[in-house]
Image: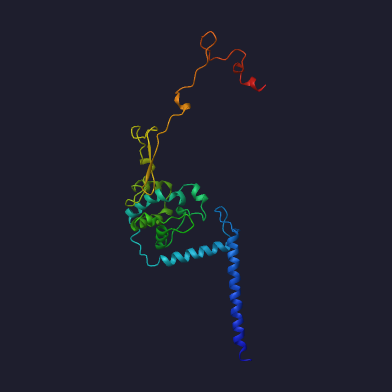
Length: 264
């Protein structure tokens, strides 16, 4: 019996460990299901939660960015091109030299780093983050619309950004050619011309409503309501003798009194 004691103790220890794990999983499930944890962006994570997420993020980026080989990041043409794309795509969150906080930068959590004051460190890490984004942070995956060479251009520019003041930043952006990354960029608002009157659809014409699946149907033309039929409001009613009624207020009427009199 003495020889069998260690085996019995090991068996009990395993059962106790299994019970602890099951209780922990049940407690975690109850906590998540309760909705107690506040996921609002204006309420920071608890310190343990933030530390866990930060460690997970940094270890994940380091693992997935392994083996990336940067091109020449000192090439002036690459830096210049990156400045134009940064100004078009990134300043709303990451700001620029001399730029105050924006609505986006103040409202996002975690707060986006002000890259004019930040050393990006490892270029491979920065490339991976720009290309793939970060879940649940507001950082998009720019690799869905940008080729790698343009992302490396952003990395090259970010290495130079902390060295620039507001004037040198604007001068570099002005020389860059603006938002350009081989066709993936969106149309700038200032380049969109409003349609002429001849191109605008008539409000009385039938409207064709196109659906996402390719089907369509026609809305009947709008009819003019009775309130819209007249282009002007009716004038004052004539006097009894047929003469037109004067638009001037009658002496002693409420309209004839001064503004100050109306308060007394």
